[in-house]
Image (cartoon, rainbow, N blue to C red; front, side, top):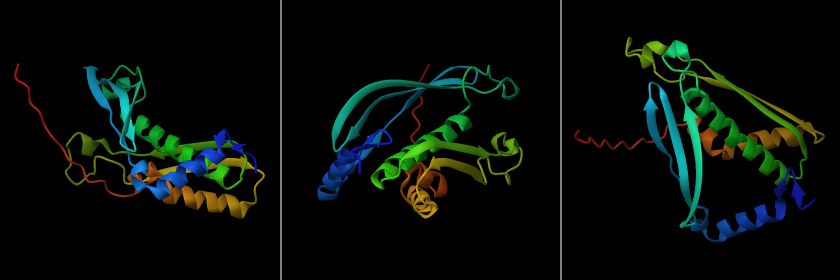
Length: 184
């Protein structure tokens, strides 16, 4: 097996997994995002640091979100639902590519198409019986590889079992809100 498959350094992946197996604290990762409202329905989220194994790392990325004109925005960026689905797809993509590399599967193409339908009566507070979020999210994974179908199906099951964002979508997350009200 090559030491680099699908752009993944397989030896480094195994080394990292081994280090986490030995010392689970090395596998504790914390992410945070700060979002600022920029007017109307536009926001910009900033990811400026994360920690892994108790060690902080600095970086700077911005993620804009807005609503289309029909939903009172300026259509200047993807809306929050599209950003949410993009996060799901990106997380699962990492899972497919890294796990495929670890399994010796060369991937020639990976595409994930995700869709969900919302009933805005829930968001608008017009009907308390209507959930403001998704009842169902559908996704299709298209993989091009010469690996046997059984091995690709095993990969698919593994990603559904281990993807953090698949888990976030598929099961409830305990939310811990804090409200800070500043005076004018």
